[in-house]
Length: 233
Image (cartoon, rainbow, N blue to C red; front, top):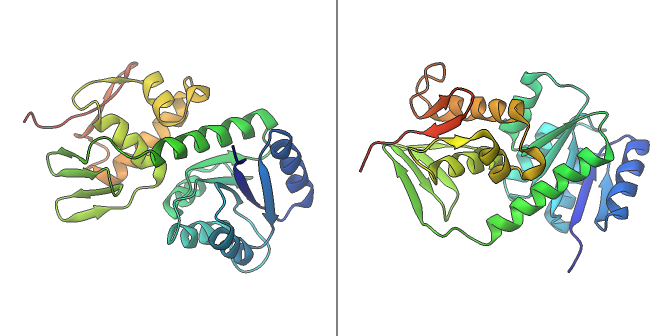
């Protein structure tokens, strides 16, 4: 099997060197750059299987802009690297198209777990959907095109937000346990990371709920999980 190709975008030579050693030692092929402009070009020409993308880069183009421009032509999984853990920074990254994030400093175990989980999910998605669409009242999920609309309005979701919504929609009007959702969307390595799940549920509600503070589509079963509530057909 051809090794997955990973593009590392960071202007810290020491970090790039360490990440390269960890990834190549596990069998991945690695390319790198410290400039945002070069990263966009490499993503288009080299078509990597995953991008590790720092927010702060050399040159005029930062990681947010790289993610936005890459998303115009590719669904490649993107993991943001950040020295900040503020929610505003994370939200900005997800809005730009990032799938996941790693806060510096991170361990080699955490790096590999995130990379493996995203690559596994990407391979699963490439197999194609079994169903063509899921309809939940005004909410329409086009599985073939990974497109979500409510009424006539298209909702722009990050790949991770889409996968979370799809997991809930495939078990409509059923409570999905925290562990079920974390495993289905991120992989078994994340099955106990409840704060991670809560954050993504919050991001998703902000995009699909009329009033995110009083959700009617994605409801919480306290201490248990979440459910997508749809009108009975």
